[in-house]
Amino acid sequence: MGFTFVPEYYFRTFNEASADFLCKIGVKGIVLDVDNTLEPYENPLPGEHVKTWLSELKERGISAAIVSNNGGERINLFNSELGLPVYYKAKKPFKKNVLNAMREMGTDKSNTVLMGDQVFTDVWAAHNTGIRAILVPPIKDKTDVFTRFKRLLEKPILKKYKKLNPLK
Image (cartoon, rainbow, N blue to C red; front, side, top):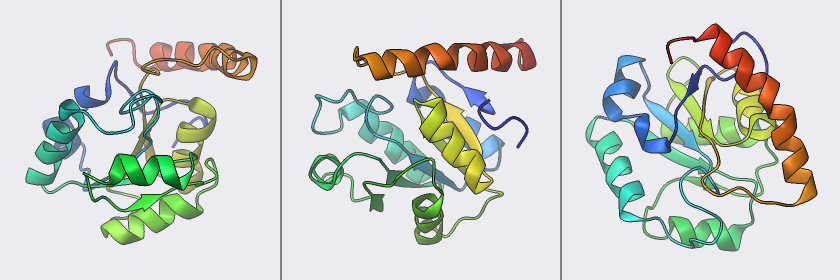
């Protein structure tokens, strides 16, 4: 996996990680964060862009599951139209619920990726599990002091990614 906090892939939005791209890198399952990865916190339901992307993945044989640190009410409502395997209050970066999602999708470490917007929860959870990480910038970032501090700590990690992947 390389560096613990450096993602293997970085995209400007979740749907830039197309079904074609995911198939090309051998992905059969994708573990997804919700808040600020697929939709901002204040969007209770997935937009058409999320549904379309997930439909394209499914058509190509790629399973998806949600693993979120948010609570059940929020995540179950978001998932109500999607019907994906879901794990809330997942305690990322711990791997237990990522492994549970992989088991439910029928995937393994070689063909699963995790996509999220945070280095210290999502990327770390992926690498803690032994799978590849896709990082996207937050759709709409929180402005509380703790989140701003975490984002400041992420900057050198993103620089490292760009240094290791100069053409991406």
